[in-house]
Amino acid sequence: MIAISAVGRSTAVGAALLALAAPAPAVLAQDAEDIADVFIGTLERDGNDVILRRCDFVKNRYVLVDAAGRHAVGAVRKAKLPAYGEVIAHYAEGEGRSILRVERVEKLTPGKNCHLLDALDKAG
Image 1: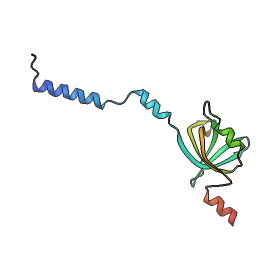
Image 2: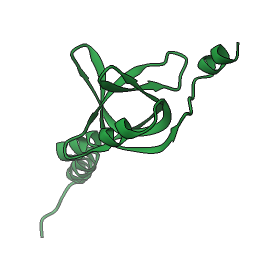
Image 3: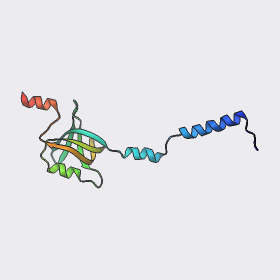
Image 4: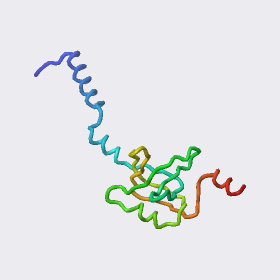
């Protein structure tokens, strides 16, 4: 039988705890990046583009493009715009523009607008 001193046991326990606290493998971090976000706003046409104006005071604008293997933007093009919608997408930047790579669009409601200032402009 091998005797382990108190210092040896402390070192072994410390090493085991350190191994448990080590960061998760890079694969998990990469998987987390693949999770799409929800962007809520008004979908509109801007020339040939379909854009989303966020439901916030700044009204950030995003150009919508289909994510790989998806066809969500084509369905939006066929809808009566402007429309309220919830866009499930991945954010990207390109050519100085904010882009959403769209997985799907939910709660598309033609004729609805989530911007209070737009409604006030029409009323006044």
